[in-house]
Image (cartoon, rainbow over the protein chains, first blue to last red):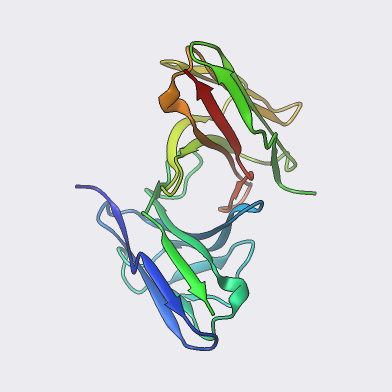
Length: 114
Length: 110
């Protein structure tokens, strides 16, 4: 089944404790992206990647890191999480990031930082 | 100014009626436009995409794009209770970034 998977689905952590949220897709997509969704603010793009070793900042990259060492994986790293990073996170992928490409979303990761 | 703005609603329509959702965007260089549906606690799923001025129909859904007015809309005909969800307008900018509106909550009343 073609899908985007994220792990973990739920995470409660404490301020400053480094964490990684994994994202993997099995559709051979070139474009991958991370979003956060907050009430009243909608979905905001954190980082995106056009291909292996190519990443770019989205609208809200501060406090996050990403890497794209393999085409299928695009982990999101929070080196020192803070409470304002408590949010619902979605990973998405599309074939090439072209104008007509549909983005497929993962199931989401709900992160709470205490 | 936000990149993408939607009427936040909530919007309630009776079953069988037409639901009209609206979206405006700020960057005239935007390339393509998408409507996603998101059920509570779930991930967004694509309903429609549109790239050229005019109307695009798919079943009960019609997307309308007016680039001169920087306006995108989604019409849902014969609304069903299963259409009750939040609808997200998304715009692909001139680069490779995507911008989403805050969503419009739709309730279809049986």
